[in-house]
Image 1 (cartoon, rainbow, N blue to C red):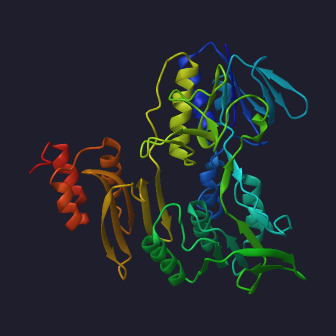
Image 2: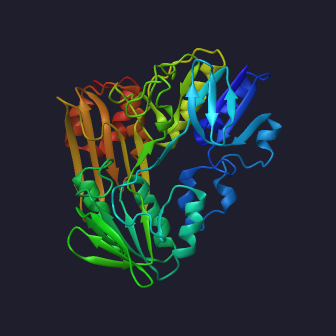
Image 3: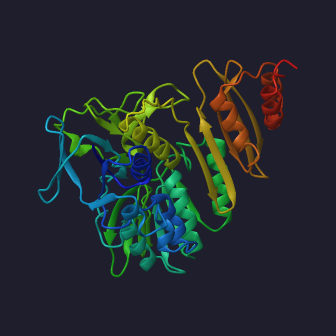
Length: 416
């Protein structure tokens, strides 16, 4: 049995390790699209902030891990899949025959139609090569523009601030982390960052980036021009699935899979940021591009590839973010559901906010700012779907009693 895994990120690496455990005699080929040891992209900001060395980004710390586990690590990119011949075409003209295939090719930064994004000094922050280039230009006192203040952008923001740069953040949405937080929470985060000396421009677009004499001129939709030594682009990602065109494998937002993470093609599976799998909060199939989901997918896909039928019951959409000491989090249907209601607690001056979303008497979503003791409780209630009974009314009045509600319902005291 030959298992081929396309993609050496968290989903692909965990899948390879799981397959080796479950199918010790199988041939396993792990195909990495980058000429480096498999690493975690989410560790790159910590590398930029000098909190870890480059080795700290590696998904497996033992340099001989893949050799010792008889996993053939191959550096190449897939260009096409022939599902009839069960073969993967690689750049350079090579081919790989497979018995079972896992597509775990992840995602790549979106290239927005902004003139000048290809100029020297404009970089995404997605690969180790990107990190090295940014580190060379983002020195103490340098003026840097960050394009995008979503989840990834806000993580990069902290790394740049720790490098001592003079930072301007430009976000086209009306608030920071708009895909994770509502207006109140996003506004708190913006005021927090501005209080730390960061210039944050929301509801503003970058129209063009031009080469100045020795710097970059960033033209904004407001008509203002900002001069910078470096522009870092963190304006969203999209699944790496274009190479599947013509293969017959069905795609939509990402690669479509069933509850066993199997694609429309026989013996072909998908996992991680490229897979359109079940979201437990909505029951719908969507792409949840976060590392915990990727690792969960990788393990489950590998079990199914090894002949152990294992359904994927759904992943929880969850994000926890530390921005210069202010912790924010969101879980599940944080924006609410049709026919549902919510409860809110807000302390603007103290940077504390809690919003709970209900569907009948079940908690289905939550977001919080400055409150860390509610993170595990909110996640637990949402994942279990535990009925709150009378505790819902109490939470409507006092959302901060969420931990009490969790303990009461866990002990069958929802009606007390």
